[in-house]
Image (cartoon, helix red, strand yellow):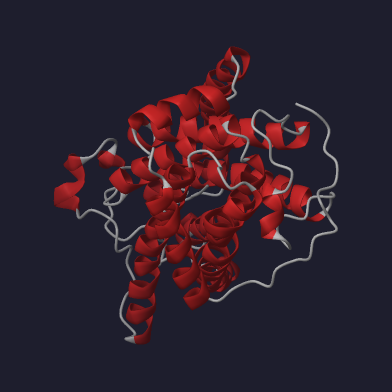
Amino acid sequence: MSTHTGGAGSLAVEPMPGYLDLITRASSVMLDAWTDCDTCGLELSKRTLLENAYITWTEIALFFFCAFLWTQVRQGLTESLFKPLGQWCRLMPKDAAKMPESAWKLVFYTMSWSYSTYLLFFTSYSFFHDPASVFYNWKSGMSVPTDIAIAYLIQGSFYGHSIYATIYMDAWRKDSGVMVVHHIITLALISFSYAFRYHNVGILVLFLHDISDIQLEFTKLNVYLKSRGGGYHLLNDVLSNMVSISFSITWFWFRLYWFPLKVLYATCLSSLQSVPNIPFYFFFNTLLLLLLLMNIYWFLFIVIFVVKVLKMKEVNDVREYEDKDLHQGPQAENDDDAGHPISSQGKHVQNGVTKEKHL
């Protein structure tokens, strides 16, 4: 690891493309790259992996230690802070059982997104304004700047923890299986992008995804608080409605607009322009495309929510199991209401709010 220096700032910044430009140019470039790759196959992949992947046993040990640490920190905060806070606020029993999960995720995502924002807008990194710069001066085995390595350790270990937490700690929901797949893909992207030194694009991906998680968890907490003590609290109701609208807009803008037009354009086109023989070009772009597809999948819940609101019907969590189905997933006994808010890095809806996370 090392301290960072400014990138190749003398190169002109490319204007952000449109969807049609992205689809036509990216598909053409990827098809040409596939056609020209006469030696592509298992043997080349094995050789490329051995020659270009750089990760130490110390870094692997740190990952497992921090993943375990996140689990312990969550359990500690749940027992010492979140549960007592729910009791002090006199939350309804069903809300008190779910509040610690949302409170924990709100704390983490606020911290992680704030750090990503600092890296992208308050340092010399130009990745957001000039996405192509993520590949400037790329070299196999290059040093990872210390500030970016810290972000990777935080996010990678958290997603390692999240795979365990989704199965054994969180309430099981209709999209929990998709969430586990999402966490695995995200962890694979984080791990391989670090090993292959694609850390610059990784920071941009994390920044574009974490903000939605903050708004989702904040909305859910206000939904729980608006009926605390058996009464009705207008402020929390207004906040939950306002942030749910903001969440819907942000989800589209960050994950379905900026993510493909900034990240995918850079990884599909700019990467080959800067590094013609860039390692695992198809592997990484396939994972990023899968991430985009999951973002679209979860956005469908938001569309369903909007349709229900327009029809003036009662809005329930469209991803929740009915009471009779609760036995089908871990800890389902805690989710005995079919219309409560949900959670995740990707993927829950309160009052119709949905969600992904993340890389």
